[in-house]
Image (cartoon, rainbow, N blue to C red):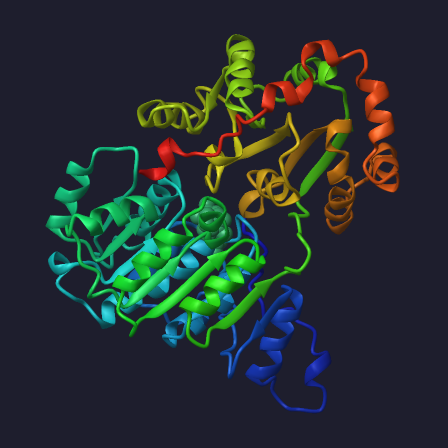
Length: 467
Ligand code: ADP
Ligand code: MG
């Protein structure tokens, strides 16, 4: 159950070491990087920690890692840990599920050991995260792995009363994990000071920008001392993220896992794509659900809150489905996620926004009832399964309306060695498939078609965008 880690250095080929006696750290670093598709840019990048033994982490941290049953660092951890421990800025780009959270948390614990401030005067470490769910997951991970290091960590997020969060802040925390909207509110109330922050993390930077948090992030960064270490973690590397990295980081080392120029889906996920009309989707969905092992955790994505509710209603009795989207109250969302996590309600119907970044264990199947608005979301959605070394399955319903995504989808499928249905190739070669779409949609259009159900109702907010 280990993501791409393999105790490197043992079975590595010696192709590069010929002639020399003893494999220098340079060449074993190179071979580890090659094997794990790690590329680094920057001056004097230290070699990766190819095993936990090589990390030299304090024993209390190693104890927690062992306790979690991890056998080796994931590639992003292996390469970003030694860089982070040199107190350098870092941009780490790796797909969802690759272990990025501990990639910044463990160096953060060590940073805290070296430099402990009075937590009551403000945090030493600040982590920005796009959503409440992610923020609390990070906090959980920090509490778990930082337990023996005796770190304190608190969370600030929107959609919940400020009172309890403020009270915890006053009690003091080494690490504050916050969504940008809520942190800004609290900064404006002058209830927290960031003047002690010397370790700053932007997690899921691409998601935060997608959600429109750039202005808040920039405002927050003005309050964080310039003498600091800044770490940015992201699953994708689009222009906007590059820009903000260039503005906020100083001479960062960049670490990429896999090829980031193209979107790369996890090869452990089997991707099925079926071309279906709007009318055919529901029947096919039930068929797929019936064919799963009882109790398997399944996420169904659709593009509107309305469709989410409707599907969950239709599927609730037979399959134990429930819905999560931005119109649900925090209480409802917590409840739904809990029911899902514990397997009491094993089918979750979600919009993209509501499902962003959730690390829910053992999701077997992702179903794209509606194709997302872009291929990046496709890769993110299917990345909910196949995490941490497990295998997963993704079913995608693709209709003529989605023809504009056909060529992007082909690239992703091919990149992960998946079968590309002939119909998808047809659509792509026809460059949009309009002709066919009109014909085939003729009989369906009385239903209002999918656009009728979607117009302007994307789940674009997240509980009032975190505020
Ligand atoms: P990302 O932030 O890249 O999406 P996460 O940090 O959420 O990924 O990690 C995904 C899962 O992998 C988590 O359940 C985490 O506990 C687990 N994990 C992290 N590091 C390791 C490791 N070295 N070996 C095995 N599992 C790990
Ligand atoms: Mg993450």
